Amino acid sequence: MTTTPDDAGSADPHSDIPTDPHANDAAPYGGGDPYADYRGGDFPFTSLVDLADRRLGAGVIAANDEFFAERENLLTPGPAVFDPERFGHKGKIMDGWETRRRRGADGDRPFPADGDHDWALIRLAAPGVIRGVLVDTAHFRGNYPQQITVEATAVAGTPGPERLLADDVTWTELVPRTPVRGHAANGFPVAAERRFTHLRLKQHPDGGIARLRVHGEVVPDPAWLDALGTLDLASVLHGGRIEDASDRFYSSPAQLIRPDLSRKMDDGWENRRRRVRGTHDWVRLRLAAQGEIRAVELDTAYLKGNSAGWAALHGCDATAGAPADDAAWTEILPRTALQPDTPHRFVLPAAVTATHLRLDVFPDGGLARLRVHGSLTAAGRTALGRRFDALTG
Ligand SMILES: NC(=O)NC(NC(N)=O)C(=O)[O-]
Image (cartoon, rainbow, N blue to C red):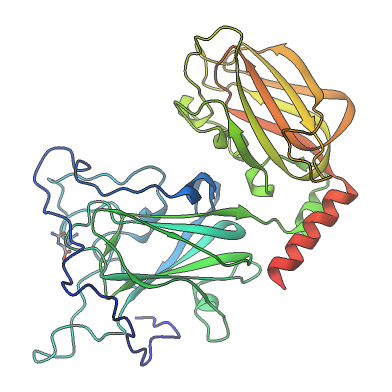
């Protein structure tokens, strides 16, 4: 079994184990809705992009053990499912990453050693600064880990597990060894001003975790954006970010700036039916950096009876530091009728320099994707380079 560099002799200084080690257990499943007794939580950092989003390209590249349930389940979009009737050759089929029960050295020492733990390695979809980690133990009621640890590192290129587990790799502890609750959302704010590329999740001494979410801010490599030249300035993978929206009732506006194509109606942004005349729905977003916009795409894919009737785009240049609300907004696309389930492409009559955009839809209705094609300005490139250097130095 692959060991990790800190296995040898790591004593457990963790006196924070509850006096009753089962204090965090959830009740056995008693039938009905398996989420009825789920212990949730409100974690503001979850408004930021999930850097470990499988749909953006993240992956669980290795684990030392996945006896009961595969490591890849950690990043599956959406909540974990539970079927009380489903058993397989190894035991109960669980929707998460679950390792076997560890045993001690012999009958006189049946419990695992204090430093024994299981680990999984996660490649982030886009390197970035991590602001919070959500360790979701949904449906792991009596077999969740007693404690977890989350560490992060930055290794350039596409390192494999062997490289990441090498002694010369420095791991930064984001969440120290900490107890978690079973069948619960365990959220941990993170304060580490660095750009990370990979995570290591540890279960002490063993157990099951349903989902891992790693929320933060994408910090793109300026050299890559230089090479692209013309790019989607709004793309989440390039550092674009939704700042606010009028309505998120059916699905999140964050999906507007995902790099993939929408595959079904709820893959885009859909707001509720608006009934207050004279109002409309809108989204405000921050671009990767100050950019020069030359073309935009508004895609209403899979939105047929509920796509936005009309849309308009405005931009503002807030590099002067004025918040987007106060800066003057420049019209990029006048109020334009949209077709349902259709990609709309617009070449601008003249390039527009902006740091933020506002998308207005009338009177309401969904949009699947928004693409903003252009290039970084010199000022935008300088700002990106400074941030990259500060977070990687
Ligand atoms: N009832 C169980 O879930 N048992 C075992 N886990 C699975 N998945 O079967 C275990 O040891 O935790």
